[in-house]
Length: 254
Image (tube, rainbow, N blue to C red; front, side, top):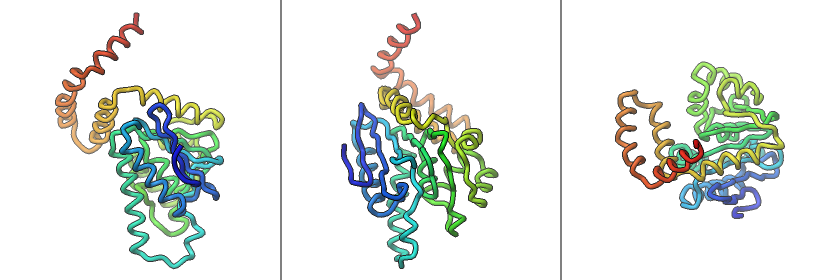
């Protein structure tokens, strides 16, 4: 186990289980934000880590920025640099080769909402609540929420949620495509680690190339995507992992 009082990481069989554990519903003040950035960066660069899971302790994911700081006089340049710091990690989590899963229980608000949907896969409990609260406090969606929200549920729905700032429960979030699955709160941590563990047992190259291709597919035409697949697949077929896994697969089919 590594980390600080407010953010920790444990690596279990290739899965980096990262946990927000702040005193106020995991609000992202500087005591959490800086350790979070450092630890997630280390998970991204650590060859022993194949899958990254982000979760919150204490019955909530995160309520976003620490609003108790909002009354303080702030330097715009300082705010800008801090946002760029967090954004750089969010970008690497999205674009990088490692599958990124968020485990959401309770509230995911503001920046917490953004992080919850910045992942490749989002699992939530039946008591999860998603709240794009930005408009309520006269700021714009950040940490990529404008992008991720639109990608997940489409432009019209994204605008409705961003403009109204209404709370979305897990059932509605699932049906609109905002999240992947709803899991009972007493089972979600075990289920997420089970799924992440299976992914971690797969070929690192295949996970990386699959994630890259899926991310690229949204931005290019079918012909370009087919060419990219054709250029990549021969290397996958000739890799020793492919031969190993084919033998395992055929044995299970017997």
